[in-house]
Image: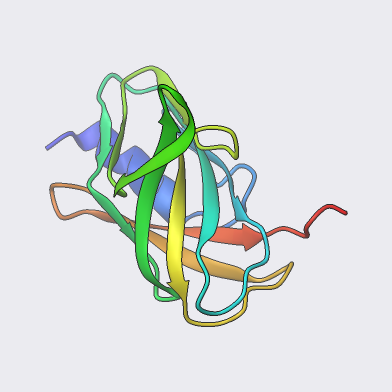
Length: 144
């Protein structure tokens, strides 16, 4: 087991402030957010990871009690179409992963209730070794 990474991940998981959620010297999470959405709809969710450790961080899936499913999406190579895949992802050692509106992001599907600006809810990230990380997602107000 990767003791240093696990210690960093646990510090990250215990934090609840959206910016930054964790700062332990190796693993950072900034801006876990989404825009308001109605019950039953799908919505984009964004995260920014920075892994300063010597080991990759692997997340095999993401779940939320407020959504039927959480999937990942990315821009297709040939244009604006998007393809959905499992919500797993890897943040390589000494790399960043920024999930953003014009790039890779998560999609929460089948919301069980309306989410309004200012709401917060947990998103659980599942790692292959059984470790789970719970992060707080903040619903930001829509612009315009």
